[in-house]
Image 1 (cartoon, chains in turn red, yellow):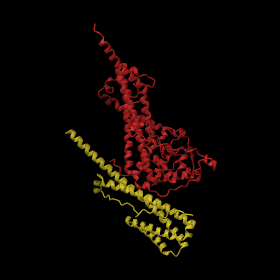
Image 2 (spheres, each protein chain N blue to C red; image 1 turned 180 degrees about the vertical axis):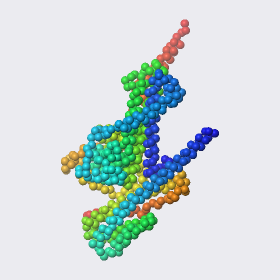
Image 3 (tube, rainbow over the protein chains, first blue to last red; image 1 turned 30 degrees about the horizontal axis):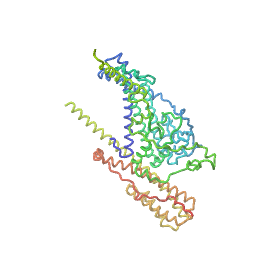
Image 4 (cartoon, rainbow over the protein chains, first blue to last red; image 1 turned 60 degrees about the vertical axis):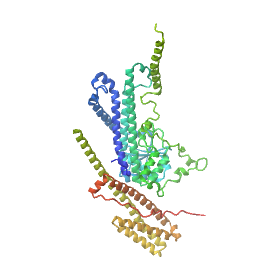
Length: 408
Length: 187
């Protein structure tokens, strides 16, 4: 059923994957809830506490928690408001000021069978694009000026087709929902009273072995839940990106242009001051770290090449209706010529070396994370180790001293 | 016994699910092939529409090259009339060849190549040619996926029950890189 013979199979497989990822969020919520509920249930309802209740917890509370997560999700989904615009600061443009861009957006919207979305422009030299808005009717496709200037018509069409697919598939709402689930899991993780907080010393735990086991267990559980939620979001977003790439090829019939776009934006896509929630809908975003949402460019190009075969490598001549002044490659490096033109955009940053993300998904989302698998900061973990060592070594030393003493 | 029955029911349910999923996939692929072919069709129609203008322009300069001009006109008429996919394929191949012949004849008449109108037409024709190629390749990808799914298990079982035929790819002979603007060489 999940066999991939081509584009349709690829899209279907990723659709199934993103469905499965919501189960991942539900499971993460269950794990957090068990850790949070442990102490209150131990006090008020010992018979149904997790672990101790011999499975009775699942019969009584796990179902309630599942319903609760679903309810919280629905509430968040309903209340989610259009926060994108304030955080990025784009301006809506029209046909008069940007005929080339608006034309391409309209062509792609017609190809996808959608009402033409509004077009936004971010005055930034970075190369990126995203889609936002609640419904298909109120959607906006936003591109950066750096992107419009760097891409020819076919490439720009490929980017727009990618974003329009996000709109057509309802990915904007889906990722908003994923971010809400993520927020719920993170907030619940903070409710865990057994959590070792940042400022708290952990060394003294050694002297209360029963509590220490509990704290370590709860810490590991909530850390695992957090990782699971992050991996779920990464996979969900990754699968939506793959689908958008595949559908962009269907709309433009030009995988070569999309691959060339990916190469052009690689490492130059970071727009300053962008909300993480927006990042999920960007054509290129974070590949690793807690907020990772995108597959790496290399993986995406490899996937496109595998799916489209020789269609990707042998394309016809590209269309290019950019005004000559806008073509980045033709602009003088500065110092002579038409100064006004050269200064219009900020200088293009040189492409940094490509990001090579760790293969393991858990390693990818936990990159840069300070807390270890037990939910402890390095300092806390060190102090706990030292105390534990002391706890073991001190009795040993003492016993040696006392055993060696003459027995008189 | 009960466990055995549960396992059996599970296996049957799984098999049914797999078959229905594959069936749906095949239908989706069939639809995809149809729409991809329609895309090719649109591009071919566009090329058909360009040809009369092109023929008239050439006739204006070189009306005595009757042979080539008639050939193109007839090939176009043939392509418009062809209904069955196989005949269609042949007719379009024929049309492509006659267009190539026309373009090589035009090389003899610098005044045609210098005409702005002809240059526009040729650029549009070359653009249309590129689009046909792209749409055709995408159609071929869809057909390849459809055929592969049809031959794999359990698609092959479904194909026995339902009248699902393998589709033919749309190949116009050798990949032609034609009618592109000639590279200007100056000394």
